[in-house]
Image 1 (cartoon, one colour):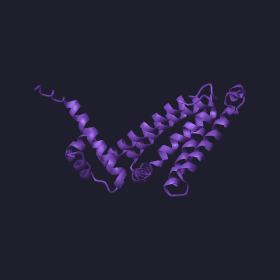
Image 2 (cartoon, rainbow, N blue to C red; image 1 turned 90 degrees about the vertical axis):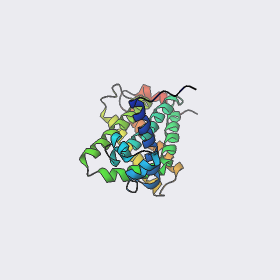
Image 3 (tube, helix red, strand yellow; image 1 turned 135 degrees about the vertical axis):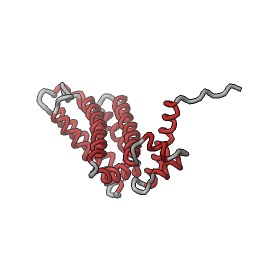
Image 4 (cartoon, rainbow, N blue to C red; image 1 turned 60 degrees about the vertical axis):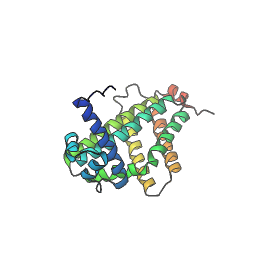
Length: 221
């Protein structure tokens, strides 16, 4: 019987990192950031604490890596779903709403992001890393909104598009926290975000010179 080929150092490190991330994700989402320890993560991953610190500088960086992985995957799905949706405003908005209902239904993820943000906000270095990641997600959303609106000749330099992204992001955060708090249910949250995005897209399309583009977005019947 042929012996399996020994793992290279890089392959071994990648396996360790993946095992640690999977264990950390489960524990952080179940127990929260504060109540999860590196020792618990190491035990769940079947690794030593030293191997964790060999891949991550600490619990904060590990938690951020978990959040980055979860949210990056979700926003990639958003871009794909909106891109594949029917080429009319209602079709695009329905895709946004479906995506949001799925993401906001993951209440442990919302709670973890909120807890982690509050935990690191007084740590300038870690908070800078977190806000930098949010800027990456906002860039994905910005591109998706620009493609949906068809209302800007230069999406890289459009203050109103920036305002739309800020308005949508802050509205979504409020809806996510309201859903966790029991103030709105998942369906109402999706409907509210859909309406908010519609308002911003119609505002973008209403700018001078966009009347021809606006005609593309007459609601499909």
